[in-house]
Length: 552
Image 1 (cartoon, rainbow, N blue to C red):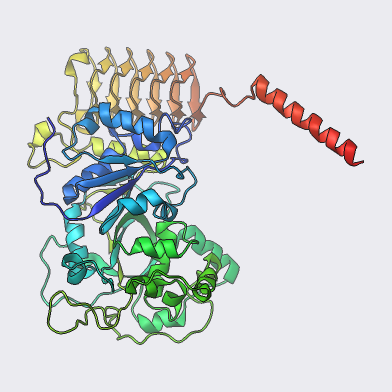
Image 2: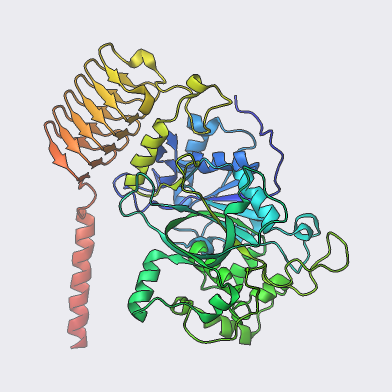
């Protein structure tokens, strides 16, 4: 039976964005019936992981956001999937805004009426493909200590607003890097040392001011255009000590103050949270005049009216001007040690809930996840290679049965082989690095090593699997040899087949004795034009010819 969350509520809301999954073409041929959020990672639905992160953080006001076309599939999963029905109370809500489609940007989502009405407090935004073993409560505590404002947390919510934000980045060049994984370019500045040393498990030592952020691809395009690596002089004057990172990736974990909704509303050209909202906010803390162009000062002061002159100025801000060095300007004056933005901690009188005398732009902080062997797992799983790698990594976690509930990882399964009765004698299963789900039938003389097997799968006699991921309902024929393969739901591999580094589409039958390598095995069904579509195309051609004749 699911239990209520015992951790005290944080007062924050969580928005989990369930995107289209365009990077999984083999397994999401129909994103409406099988959306990305329901793809299995180590036998759990993908969306289970960010939901679990919220509960471990103490956030119980959780909303999943998806396009209307995917709402039925996700609703069904929330009501039937045993991992999702076993979630604590209160359960997550699902919102499918009418104008949300597969091409809507993440910042544009915050502009939708349903979302603006939904968000009533500071909030966190998470992707549905996040796997984060890090304790979210520690992340939230670091935000409260270094970026949040007591008047905003405990006050009446009146402007000027003082709460800052926080984003999370992690290193991609790990012991087992994934080829082609996206990375970002970020520039950070050190924070002043704390008056008292933080506790051993505090994340505060890993915090810094974010001064610049953009995808690595955008940086490469900029350098090709400029034929150099451009840095604004004002950035160096404001922050003499800078740290530039090029192999880290934005985890898309954002803790944001409620006023960000108005900031996004004021700037219609902001399309994404990571590149646009966070990127421009970071620059506005050191680039003179930028906060006025963006209307950020008005938002902080609680003025939502947008004069025509300001609209014109804001419209001039675009991606073409995203370089840190495009034009000279007068920088702000800061100390050598990168102190907080001027006036951020200045209060009126001695009251704890008094507001600053002069409203200033609150900081946006960056948490840089340490790259240690014993560091908690933190990755986004948005490609097939990452899906396989992270699933196999999670399969190596000791089960709750082995370690006990108190010492187990939050991602540990109860047992490595959920249905031992289905495993016949004379089989080889390396339990220390494999996961076998419920109702899996494993016949004799099979070998399963470093693999994850989904529910209701059948592994026929003599099959050999190494570093494979099988989704629910897969059938592997007699004598098959599969190496580093991902098999979609209800697919079947004919007997005697040998596949290496292959992806098999859901519901696909692979012919017996197939030999293939480095391939995406997909059905051509649905790619051909139907008779009706062909007739409509011919009619369009005939109409076009008629128009040309009439025009002479």
